[in-house]
Amino acid sequence: MEYIQMTYEEWLEQYKPLLNVDGTPLVFETYGVDYEELKEKNRLTIWTVEDIDGETAMFSGFHWVNRLHYHITTVPFKEEQSIAVVMPQEEEDLDEIDVDSPEWTCHWCTETNVVEPPMADGMHVECENCGEKFILRICRKKETGT
Image 1 (cartoon, helix red, strand yellow):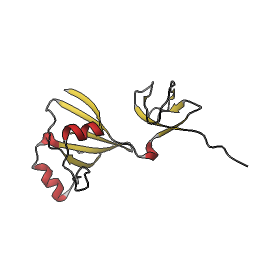
Image 2: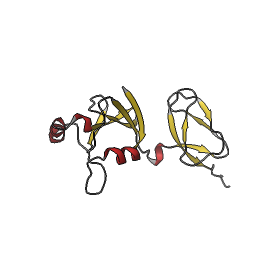
Image 3: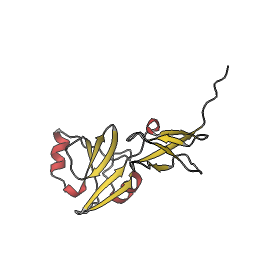
Image 4: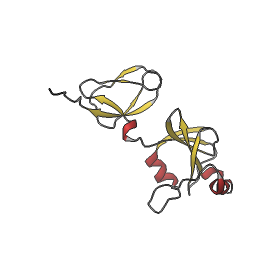
């Protein structure tokens, strides 16, 4: 089995999901007509969006556990591939780090990490303890005026 991780943007470009009229990937529900339609599709074109401990992730294939919804692509993945797609983060889900204090705490293992300069807004960091990856939002502490 070949394990692959890619960004959401890479997934959009490479696998070409079915799109809504507004250009966003078409969502297939986990029940009813949508679910019946999924059963008729090539299983190598089905992608499952899942809730993993409060975080959203997408994986190649048809999964049951923690499923939120499905997407169908026009380009199939390969049988021997297991692909994880890093989903775009909502603004409030990004980890904020003070530009003057480059320490951050991993949400998974609660280990304190230090970002080595130069820091950049939206940079990808990896926890030194557990290897979990995060996107950082650089901020400056607000001064409290009196």
